[in-house]
Image 1 (tube, rainbow, N blue to C red):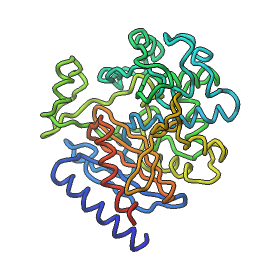
Image 2: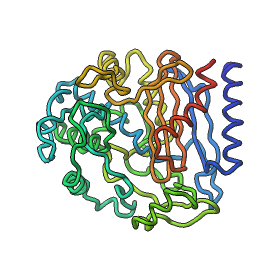
Image 3: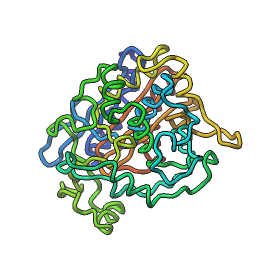
Amino acid sequence: MSPENYDNGLRVKTNLDHLIKKGELPGIQYMVMNRTKVLFEYYGGLQDIKNNIPVTPSTTFMLNSSTKTVTAAAILQLVEKGDIQLDSILNSYYPANPYGNEVTVRHLLTHTSGIADPPLINWFHAAEDHAHFDEDAALLKILKKSKRKSRSGEKYRYSNIGYWLLGKIIEKVTTMSYPDYVRKHIIQPLSIPAKQMDFVIPDLNLQAKEYQRKFSFLNLIIYVIGSNKIRETSDGSWSRYKFIYHNGYAYGGLYANVLGVSRFLRDMLQEQPVLFSPQTKQMFFKSEKSNAGEPLAATLGWRTGELARTPYFGKPGGGRGSSSNFRIYPDKGIATVFLANRVEINESAINAFSDSLDRPFIQS
């Protein structure tokens, strides 16, 4: 590690140590990398408060919506092969939808389909029920209730349903399950072991317990709407939740640690990625526009932003007991990722936390 990166890392370590000591954060993994090596890594706090088990490099976390970037990469692989057309309508691949002929694959990728995004508070099931869960039936039930809130291509409107549907498109054109396609064409080509990234919890003993402040507004909502059954117990000032799975793999279903995520991010830093051609990579990171020609703060899978006048591509993920963020800073040639086991569902708050972690490395 260079002296400069050592100093920057020391600042970040001091900040994270302080947050954990204050009880603001149960546990976290954080990594900064370039295309060839890790520049900084941090593993701190506890994956299990009750049993005092520390976070280690092997600890895995739920990725929640950070999964969407992997889903988008899978779609672009199939676009490159000619199996999917970006501007083909959803009905061509998944007729069992209520949105007519206006929604395209591009709209789904860029969150411009106009499809509503109902609260996800009940869009999950207990780990013990996963083997018998019917994902297709769950999606059809959601689609019956979900309408479009705006015209397709009109504006950015975040939609988990849109990415759930992208997973079904992948299954239609490949005749494989979405998890099996991603395992074969993304996880395995990047030599990511299953214990570092998969759609099932790789090892229950290494999976971070998920936490939320006991006295918090979200905890109150969970209690009021009747989802209290997912709350396992309390560990001090934290409510601990049971292990769960999202009802849809493609919008939030991956489990991973930063070692696995780093292989994906480092591939995206390469001039010649393993996953697809340089031309497809360029398309992946090109900002999209609305029907009116107005630029969107989104690409075919990433959100765009800026930190210290440095542009980045990112994908926050927030769930009922965890949070995450992936970022790539092309001008600096680096990528960052954090995974934590405290709930955060607000994109702005997740990005603000990433800002605080990444700033020393970006300003240098």
